[in-house]
Length: 365
Ligand SMILES: Cc1ncc(COP(=O)(O)O)c(C=O)c1O
Image (cartoon, rainbow, N blue to C red; front, side, top):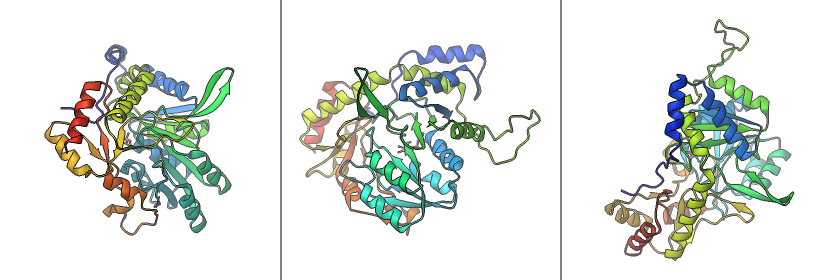
């Protein structure tokens, strides 16, 4: 079976897990959590990182620490439900925004939504390993006193090229531009800890608060379990962080392979692919294609008959029964993409030969 994006260990993870076992920190505390947070922090160049059990909880804490409750929160309609559920956890009203030609939140529609509503936060998903055109969105947020949360669950490692500094390319990573960013380390992501997430921010106070809330909000100055507010049990385990340390060592290698796979698909398929914003480097976590004539659901069926997994593009949130009647600012793009597109196998152990075979099946369907 060829899966969409299966885990790919570096080989070091088991060694680190054994070390964690030896230390007996089989718990949501321990040396590997600190190491993993430091690794993520230094890779994306951000002041604070908090390792959590998944990115959904990281988004929930983002809203919590910013005090976004019973408010209007904007999010792209073209995303996974994990971007939106946390909005509901805090009894907020989600408002959906359609996407631009790069498949990310459309800034003009966002501007209209801001004019017509009382929006307190924007959750901006960076999808399929690419980075959104975030700076115009950040400007709008800054001008209107709106918090910006980057859902980089799918886009750890994507960056803006910011020019040359000291003869080196200066880059700014997705997740580090808004007030708070989150990354997912779920089993299907670029890197995995089986399940995991990281909350990042350049505001150390917000990160400190997120860490406090993620460990049941135990008041730190008391040993006798004193609580003044609601907390959550969202911290990452030391064992999973040990896997994360091994995974972070190979991040650039994995991105290079993902991008190579994307180029193989481009070589073998005469179709449209998700565009990459100028001056950015996406990771191509998943290669996503939009067919000119083919029905993606027929192609998916044919691939499945050949034991190859593929998936539809995101089914827009404004079409979900859960969000019937929700406000949405639309331009038809997300519905079009859903009707015509497909996510292709993008695991980093794929060979060029396998990609060629996948494309031959696509041609024949
Ligand atoms: C865009 C997006 N947001 C949020 C999530 C939630 O991440 P997690 O599974 O780590 O909770 C995911 C993926 O799972 C995602 O793709």
